[in-house]
Length: 153
Image 1 (cartoon, one colour):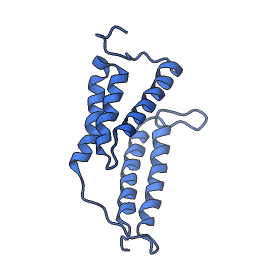
Image 2 (image 1 turned 60 degrees about the vertical axis):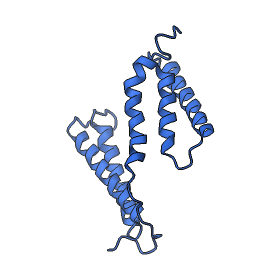
Image 3 (image 1 turned 180 degrees about the vertical axis):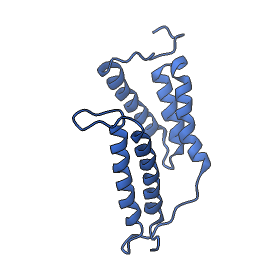
Image 4 (image 1 turned 135 degrees about the vertical axis):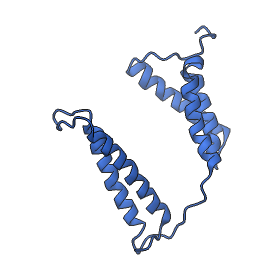
């Protein structure tokens, strides 16, 4: 078999690898049943579904009617602009608070997009901050510091 759509094929292989990892790790915990789920139930089932989805996508990239596509050259700076702000968010959450940390996360990681605009980044940041406040602070009642301690709010 020949790979026709390289993007689909390699995306499927990536899904297969992540699914195998999570299914394997989940299998090391107590599985339980659908009525009484153990800690290994969710990661194992989700990993197996991800493996199935990966198989479907990878085989789809090798079928005769697939649209020919190649994988672009890997960009390390783009990866750094995506993963770096996530690490920075974790480091700055406590000293800067949730709102400023999320603003920095979205602002910096938005540079990774080829279609970057400040307006879009600010809309995304406002939506994410509002969603996090709604879900984590109000709905779940988690105790996150919202602003830096030196602000006094």
